[in-house]
Length: 95
Image (cartoon, rainbow, N blue to C red; front, side, top):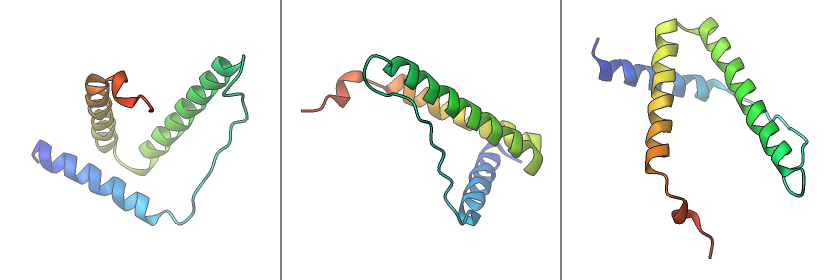
C-alpha cells in the first residue's frame, strides 16, 4: 500500500466518522479571558484542549488500528508544522 493511498484512507475514515456524528457536543470552560487574570484563563483553555485531544486519541486506539492512528497523528503534525512555518503575525492586523 503506497503512502498516498494510506493518507487518503485515513482522511476518508476521518470524514466518515465525522459524517455519522448526529449531535454536536459543546464543552464549556468558565475562566477569565480578559483582564488581569487573562493569562490564567488562556492557559486553562489550552490545557482543556490538550486533555480533550488526548481523550480523542485514546478512543481512536479503541476504534481503529494503531497504524491508522499513527498516520493520523503524523498528518496532524505535518499540517501544524506547515501552518507554523508559514505563519506571519503581520498578516492578521485588524484595520
